Image (cartoon, rainbow over all chains, first blue to last red; front, side, top):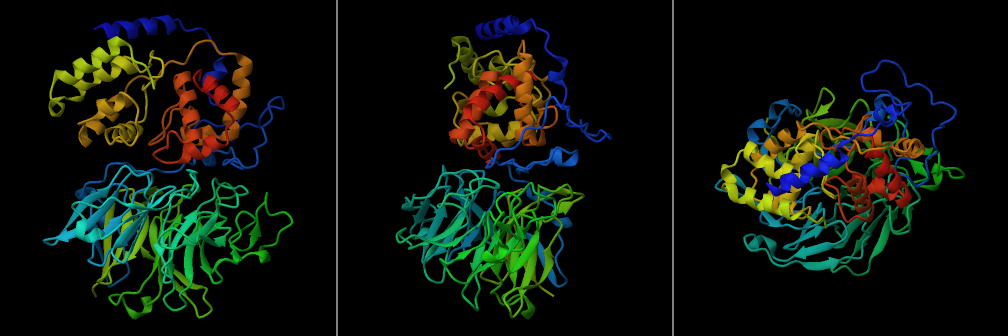
Length: 426
Length: 190
């Protein structure tokens, strides 16, 4: 075949391999090969370790053995077949049960529910939004929008579905009556930054009928521009944008306290400082427009950043009301407002922890329940749905929770492309 | 956009017409892939990446993105059209078994040493492995074609290529174009 001849000829031209320094093929000096027992040899004086630039996403990353192998974990694009989901490994408290709600929802991320019970699900690594309906008692999964760029955020309000891509928010009107032929969406806003880092969004409509849209910090640890590391709110048509909270590194889940009506949100802390700090945070916005939650100066309310914190005190910022585990990736959260669960769960906060990657021993990969005391702070944090972390490996990764109309809790898992249902049935 | 030789285009068309998409096994499909990507894991075609020893999960993800047209790169969208999920997995496994690519030729010792500093600074080894062979969803980059590394790092930096996971987009923001040139040079020769 002509092409094969051409390709082979190309190979022959390059084929005479010239000798190159042997060191080019070995691991770089100072980095141990995997499995070696010896600690890393110190770098020779002639080649000092270069200083990291400020603003580099990798500032502070160490070169020791296990920490040299930590990497973000992306789930597969193909959903796990229902029969292979880890249901037998999942555990819930006594009196509760967990079952499969829907499978085949590749990269299932944030969720919203329509007035007629349709479940809308966004994606972060794929390009689509799903609608899931119960037809004859079985979940039917449909893609209602595709070709979008990281459409992680979904919110439902007065018949309309809002979808947040990386830098745009769209509105699909009267969506539940038109699932088979979804309407062309209306652009709500495209006045949002385009940074990939922490650019995917969770969105929600508040009791004030405004749309809340975060903008994450465009990197791990850096001085964010005025336009980043914040939560904005705007009218439902995209006008009258205000910044309601600053110093928020990356929030992928929030809800309003049913009693106080205050915005309560998770925030993911910086990486590559220590395996054990900072914790991810649970925060409360009590004075919209006036509060700064610390990033990049102060983390978890009680220590200043080793680079950006000099000259600052954590007392300048609003501390979290609770800590959610270091690098646990606390994402979606909702106040429990159903009537199915026992009374002790009334207004408790259910929080999905996607699970850590920046730790040698992983934590998270679960849903926890936080109960707030009368002082508004987290009084207890207990496991609620566990089992996604097995032998330091993920068999699933929860992203968001949603209180369904019947009071059951739905949990999305982007690692398997599935949604589970936790119900109380003593 | 990469330019294909007439021969490569002919090979693709012949392969696509050879059998109905459903009926082809990996053994039947692979020659069409290797016509461009190289018989033994090393690509000799400008702009076409070597695939030898590429982690299977990474191959599955990229083929999936090509099939769904979420990642657009001529002719890969046509090549991936009609592949079933099982085809993706089978092709991923087959590609992972191809021998690792051969590093590019002569390496300037001074440039390699300087680039080592960049690799250490940006901790490429943390995700891509001490030997840059990749793992799971993270590709092998050691001995990848220099022109492909160059184009890809630039595309991550400009966001022209949005990663399946945005990690490389974030990393590339911290790279100057001069550093990208040096990294592509050195990693192609590892």
